[in-house]
Image (cartoon, rainbow, N blue to C red; front, side):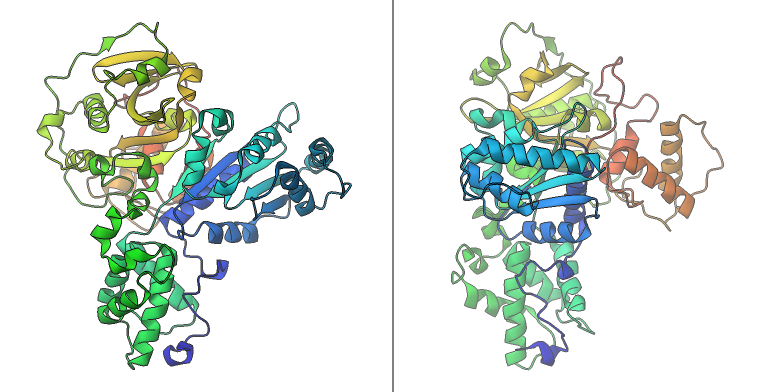
Length: 550
């Protein structure tokens, strides 16, 4: 209705998952990197979760459009089926012939396995993508696990990507599904957009739809963010109604008044969208908080806010602790499960942060931040929350807070203080326990929080064309990585040659290969500094690549 009025070729805010409108912000690039990891790494098993409306299906559609010809894809969109129907759907997607009246899963799996072997022999790969995977029943989830057993002597034949709402993570956390959860090599929680990303998202969709000028004022976009909480679907619904309102009032630009009126009109009329009546602060309390810091829904957001991406320019301040508590080694006669169930075990978020600060040589009592990550920022550190496996932690080589879930379903935040090939040491309060990795894997589902230090207080990202001391640091870090001597006359300009070196480093460490040094690339580089502290890996443990993070 308003397209001609605003000079648009099409509706910029349709809620249909059209890859043409995909806005590749930081969160989307990270999610796509996890998809790429699951496709490229043999045996990759990826889980992507997010709240309703955060753009999961759109990312799947975009992935399908960019897949190379040597990748075969089976896309399951309706997971509310039986195990037999599930395998039959995979066969149908891959055009595998089978007896249509068969009710035998074995016959279907045999046909699938034969096809996968033929595809593998041609040097091709096969990927299974399951959307709305939170609706899979337990029988089908068990069948998914069994499909991961289809393999040659060296490689898995089927890469699997599960996409769903947060209920999927909760379902996989059940004790009887641990075998499946432990096979997931990369996990990512798709958060909502922050304010600046919301602005970019709105502008991007307007430009793609043909707008020759800004259609939303800055204040109007701020208002969209305030009412939508950065949820892309909510942004689309709200912007569409606000444009209609501006059109009806003969306004050339959407201002806050039009957005407020749109939010009022929508209200509770769309199921599950009632937070349109409430501004950001109230809406977060109503359940949208899960979208703010990536995977932070699994941590106490009141104690870790500020995680994931911190852009404030704060001078790095070393606060050396003079009263670091002694760690009391414990013999491991007890099983980890029993320790977690013991009510005297110290495993709260605040204590975990205190332990991490101690690992960094900081005195928590000297930090005045309101939350753990605010305090980290005050000390010149950054927090980042991600999901993954032990390879992630080995590559970053820094103490981490991980979340364990006991047999009652209660969550515990515990610091990983040492890691080698077979053992891991955990800090619970002022006690340190050492367990086998297999023992900890029974209770860890991949969530972790790390701290890292940027080369300069206000530098969280470096990209080609920039210059300064941080670029000199980058050249030195790459030299450390390659075992080369320090170049005292290193250029402070980020040129094409340096970008190529960064991309090689990112490729080696399974990061987003874009030549832009963001928080994950910084963290991976930091570990190669001489005498880098605080280390996580034991002295005899070598570094490994293949973290699968972005």
